[in-house]
Length: 71
Ligand SMILES: [Zn+2]
Image (tube, rainbow, N blue to C red):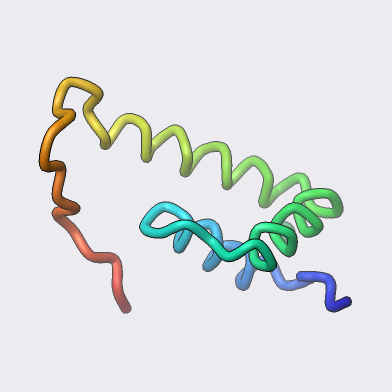
């Protein structure tokens, strides 16, 4: 199995996970990477918190994603 060593790749998956659910394999790769890299784990937590802040809990209906972070 190929451990996800690259932090850059991990960051890509973390960002991707905010827009769409990751595949089981990608989730596993991230988990493995987090187990060896606390830095990326912190990044993931920070991004997840930002994502929660961006998504207002009051707007429950028809929340269309406004901005695309596509390269
Ligand atoms: Zn890392």
